[in-house]
Image (cartoon, rainbow, N blue to C red; front, top):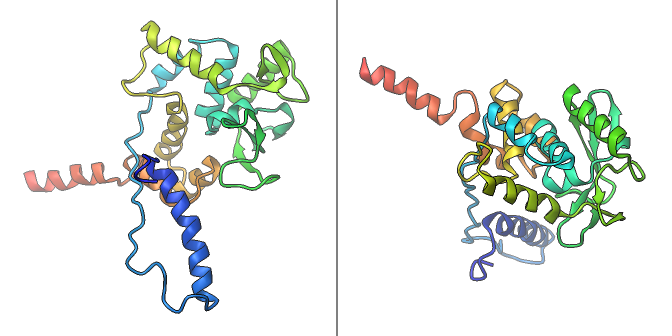
Length: 245
């Protein structure tokens, strides 16, 4: 995987699965020695997340068509991944303040599939802010739904919304130069905004990890630790004050 340039996150996921199998074999006596002794796992060290400010987010969400605004709202307001936002369904509003994420549009198959790190039929519930619920309902009233789904392929409503439809819009918006977008920000940065908003308002990182569907809280910590109260950056400022005294 390293020779083929596979990303570290994918390497880590593959290693974790293989490690679980080998350790089970060792526990059951299939291997007399621990097969992982001396094996160094891949170190996933994600790049710093590029997060838009609230003012930038407000401009970004209105820079595209109605589908673009819906997706940006779902990512920034509920923490959905791109593919999860494309599979938004009116029937998944299970309470006024709860949205149930049950599936995603899978990039490789262009079909609905199970959530990342979950089996078919599994889901996760996330807080649903009133403004995001209003966006969902507004879009449904304006454009209608197909079996509850809000986003479908324009040329064939029998098919899910394609990833390239949103990617093309994002590229056009960036290229236009008419919207203030942080350098290096990708569409996924709207989901980073969600994490930043949660953590900066004191929501526990364990809850944020669960709502974002991370495999473990370690992933959340690695990506967003600089946003936590008492983070390394803030500690450095406190220590500097004492040193300068």
